[in-house]
Image 1 (tube, rainbow, N blue to C red):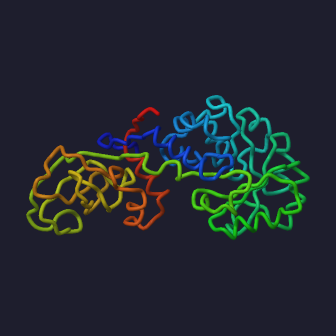
Image 2: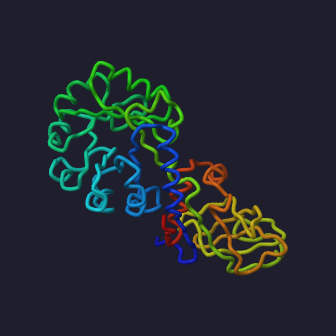
Image 3: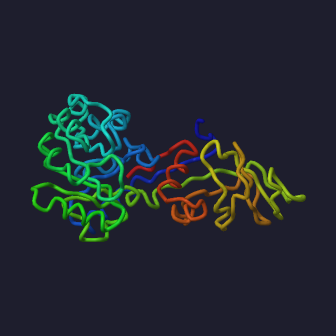
Length: 310
């Protein structure tokens, strides 16, 4: 379903640049900025343009994402496709300045001309090479770089141990491991660390009234409530929000509208903040019982995107 025309998603590119600079100062190694899934919903092309001078390259999930955002032509920097290859033609990757990740000898041989990088399984157990097959894949693809999908320190250290006798450029650390010097290796791959605090998602009260008994489909109790025109068809869920700067809740989310808890002075037309202005991705994620990454992605897809220039 298209985004709600009643929700504004405002993206602060200057904040993304500041976050990127902060990460670069802290880690002291090159950054490969993760812009997969349309930069977590913020817009891969605009984000990449905003930070291109601060990073070594970019990471997408697959070749299609790079094509859709036209990253090769727009940015002119190396792009790594971290997911399984969706083409066996090396020229498809070369044309987009994309280096594919490979995990089998057959993939590596077919994509050798595109300078593939080796994806090694250190515990995630998905589209990655088992340690006992590494040498075969390295030879087939003439790989000089390897990485792992790491969520914990032991994943990163396992990568270093597995490859210790091979001359390979290594990277493992996403946002969760940036502050661990043992996990930084030759580059880091920050994703959500670049986007924290850079998005403000808001709507406006289409209605505001005193509540006369239980309301909505599930008979929610409330003293006063309002309605915004966004719902679960757009990706919204019950959880926290701000109205007039005060913490409130989305009491019930319907398909294309949602009930909002209100105070006595809140009125029709007032802004309802779904993210930003002090309401963080982590707070929303906690209430949604999910990750900040998922919360950010869904909130960014709620409405039309506007960009504050860096």
